[in-house]
Amino acid sequence: MIGLVAAIVLLVAVDYAAAATAEYQVSSRLRQQLALPDDPAVKINGFPFLTQALGGDYQRVEVSADRLTVGQMNNVGVRAQLYHVRLPLGEVLSGTLRSIHIDDLQGTVQVTDEDLRRQLRGVTKLKVQPVDPGALDAALANSKDAMPGSSVTGITPDQAVRLVATTDVLGQKTEVSVIAVLQLAGRQIQISPRDIRLGSGPAATRLPDTVQASLRRMFTLQIDPGELPFDVTPTTLRAVDTAIQVSGVAHNVTVAAGGGTGDS
Image (cartoon, rainbow, N blue to C red):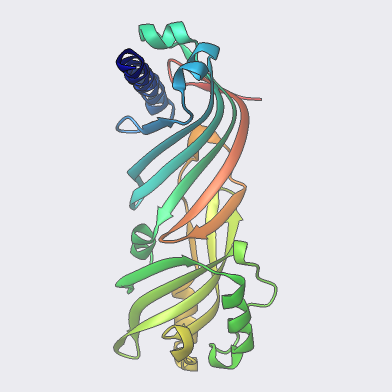
């Protein structure tokens, strides 16, 4: 029994050591391909690892890097989900990995509320939140409390974002709640306010007409999030807690040792 336990412990230790070696190899190659200042965090999912390693087929690999600088933003996050990553075991163990083939992947760039706030002149605090169907229904039902001209008709939750901002309104620091539409304009993020209120929640009230135009201009933004991982074309845009994410997919991608890629 003691020998069996020792064998199991040794097998688990070898499994984790082999996974760490493969993660390091992948991280080093992806740092070049993604043009990152440091190696990204890489996690190979699935246990036991050795069964994947022997077949050279890793079912799902997660890649992440944070606090990247893109234009005026310096807290951009990069995420990638890689499916069926092909790594020859011999090259992994010898540290001579020449290329990585990926069957399918999703690449994502994440713009945080911290970076978004810097784009909004006069805003001192900002929270980015997704919008659920109930919030849209409530905004539509209580449209009399919204800024004149506001309308959330036709907006779906997956194309909406709520911005809760603190800014100057008629000489006072005030919390303003904005429901805006998210759209892709080529490779850029377009934010168009549709419902603006003073305060948030049940206490929200209509804003004076005199500040309507300036607030609409303030919260109308077009942001360049930079290139998506693996040069994928952005197709999906959504709000999550504290951030806006733009994503795209690619298939049959090969990452060479020099950092280049090819796909079909």
